[in-house]
Image (cartoon, rainbow, N blue to C red; front, side, top):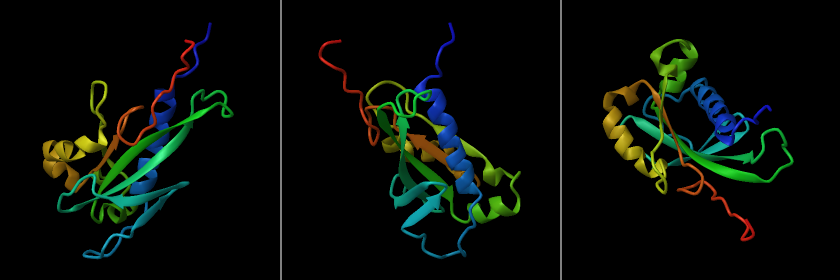
Length: 156
């Protein structure tokens, strides 16, 4: 019997593609204020304060995913995420796509009940200078932070 891919397996590639698209965007001139929104593929990210660290800019967004990836008409849930980009890294990534500027760190809070986005400042402290040249992606697991929870029927 063949198993259906899990929601996690379907969501991680979607977020990875989003991250790669973001690093391929053209950057802004040095010293320019970041725009309030950042279009990345079909996503519209908004500037947020998930990480307040000099030299990086955080963008928040969410993906709506079907519960059953094999059935796009199935009910959906929302996955919230924050993408932290080094200031000016998008332009560098477009110029040299194989450089470290296109590398990303994916940070996920372990254990139930705690969102990863709220831990982004701690991850940023831990990663330190790596964030000068790399993006960081944090996403909240279902039922935490900006991600939707699972509401089970009482009859189960």
